[in-house]
Image 1: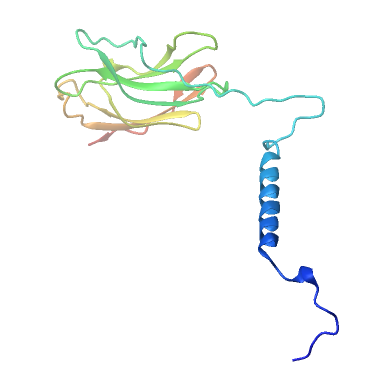
Image 2: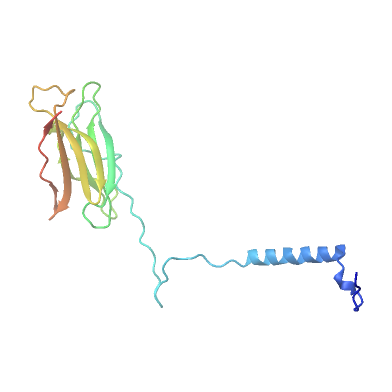
Length: 192
């Protein structure tokens, strides 16, 4: 083995004090860096001189406590299904509710109602009836998507058909046009 011509330097050998000093320095850097964190990030920066905030999300109207225009006699009205979406494009969601009477027997007919709640109003209100319970429909495959209400309506070919056994099926779609909900040309009712 060849020896170095330069004498060994004292600081090239590690001693326990070197490890303690290194550990202390690393702990100090970690503590200091955790105290200095950047501000929270935002996706869009406001324009110079302007402060912008995102619009507050508006909750859709609730169905509790709403007086639906359905005659149930001594039993109460039950919200069987509901969905929400902005149907009229005003930036505020509406709620669409499928409601029937809480009957102990048979299949009570459904009503489909659109609820809205004006800004500052304390209670939602029914603004449209899409399906009247007097028409004896049962609503299935109900949805609110892309500003439209869709449903499959199960109905009856005559008043003699019992409520338990609808014998017709019809698809329906409603959209807000020119200040009213317009039902698309219904598909031809099919026997089921």
